[in-house]
Length: 124
Image (tube, rainbow, N blue to C red; front, top):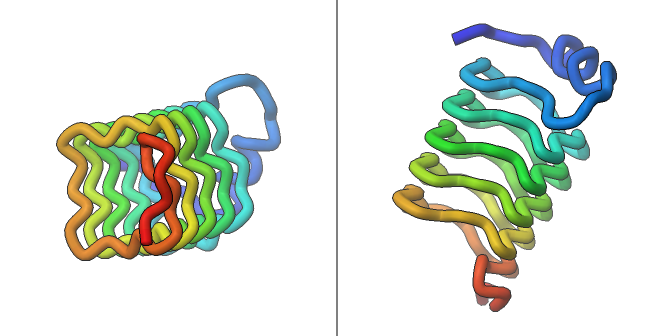
């Protein structure tokens, strides 16, 4: 798994183009709040303990991604594919998961207060 720095991610996202490819990369513990990952391919990426608060992950491919203990409060995960992802212990407080795919997703010990769920309801 390739290990990238915050600066590397800024360069990759700054190059523009649709659907940045970050599959399998190690972004664990990086501070990536407010980053725009719209449509990014983050399949099997390690985002454990990363701060993705307020990040735009709409339509991102996060299949089998490691998001354990990640901070995703108020993140936009609208239409994201989280199939098989591990979100155990993640903070999804106020996140938008509308129309997200959560098949085989581990949500154990996840904070979902105020999150908008795939069916459009708000978690209390």
